[in-house]
Image 1 (cartoon, rainbow, N blue to C red):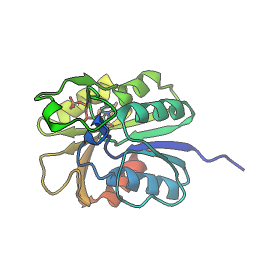
Image 2: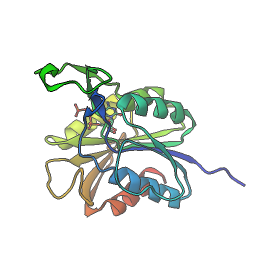
Image 3: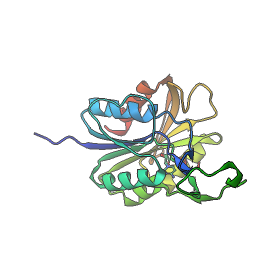
Image 4: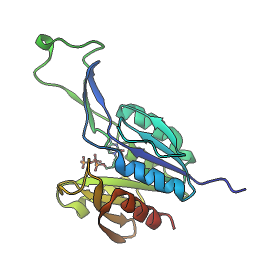
Length: 212
Ligand code: CTP
């Protein structure tokens, strides 16, 4: 019996803690990554879904790794990537984390009026640098202007095979919506537009194009 091909997917937001009771995050629902995981499982992949905190049901039959911070997400993805033939990174990873103020609830009178931020690792860039010729790596780009040009830059800089460009200024799509509308760009300048539809349909369109 042939072994199933391994597909690694990241999803959701990360939480970057300020102290034990406060964090910085973003409104990513995880839906796009969860739909990709569900469709990939139905296509026959062995799917590992690495997700930040979300409140949607886990897809059936996938290996689920729950993480909180960008640092934790990086550790799990860097470990699992070498065994994966296909990796799709949808997570809204926080680019920065605040300097951690300590393992207690900082009292209001002691809370600083400004926070210092530290750059988080760019996980997708690291995976792109590690990638071998028998692996396919797909990124997402959240853009509010010059979408395609910025997407193309990320595709090349991060050594990706494909990038899914999202226009986050469109109120009909994006973070918490059931719907999405994206453009898929390839390394060889191929260009596919997927019109407004459910995230499930967009997930199927993406997978059918990147895994032929
Ligand atoms: N990403 C990542 N690690 C980060 C930031 C982003 O792995 N620290 C991944 C995301 O999962 C996504 C891709 O990189 O697949 C692009 O994320 P995006 O937020 O659009 O771009 P950035 O690289 O953060 O660039 P910028 O914020 O300048 O647009």
